[in-house]
Image (tube, rainbow, N blue to C red):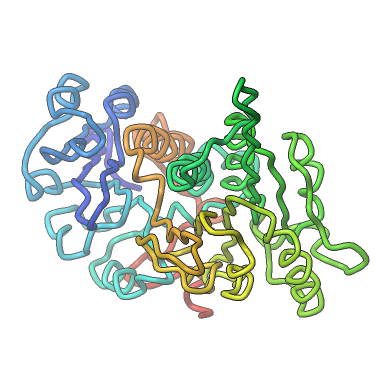
Length: 384
């Protein structure tokens, strides 16, 4: 447990240090809600600047404002979009919690440092895909916005119109958009492309997504007569497909992708490199001026030749290595992220103790707790 009735829980919100990160882990809305629960909230000056939230709004919501050191001093809980370095938390209380997106596989060194410093690290991206955790799921909230932004960025790079247009000078054909991977990001990409008037198709290794694709008015493109993945993998995510299915899908995609104007790839497997969906040879079949947006660029990319954070040309096709698109619309992504964190902590808030309590046997707690008692305790990390 953190905090006591006599000493209210102190929640700290730091300015993000990662390059290009404009989001913030709390908003005036969630600051007010935390204070209503009985906590005190301290915020580093300028923490919300990237998300267009002035310090004055945090102050008006009741947050104490100061520099990084004063913000973390005696903090029981530190909220972050991306986890702060352990060395920056020296002033926090013993056993303080860090609640953030922690990139446990990519930044194992930081997780070990948290353990060594006696910090309890709670990785919000490990939130299980169960009904009661939906409102706490940062991957879903941020992927939703990323799927939307992928279409917007694709439309800007495409340099042609999206919808069909009937004019006195002739007809403009609608853009053909193909979405590969129908998770949260993919579904939002489909919906956004349809709203913009594109002709949309989509595919996924999970056969159960076919109805979801059709419900959004898009055409499902699926391998027939070869067993795919009927359901979903652990935690609601796709798992790796068989070699037979991968080969059949590659053949199907090759014939379909040559006719597409914009392709959006979203396939990710937690803790592993992104699966390769589009080869250089397949890119070569697309017409000049086509655009591919790879949402898995930071995990190695679904597209051959993709470079994270850059737009490159291959055979006249623009390949955009999308780098965390949610942070490119930081006001909305911060609002959703902050609500995810509030929903998590408030769900475990003990009114009598005036503090959150995390039961060891709770499914959510077991999934997201990385460190405790000076050790790394997450089975997903200790088994890797």
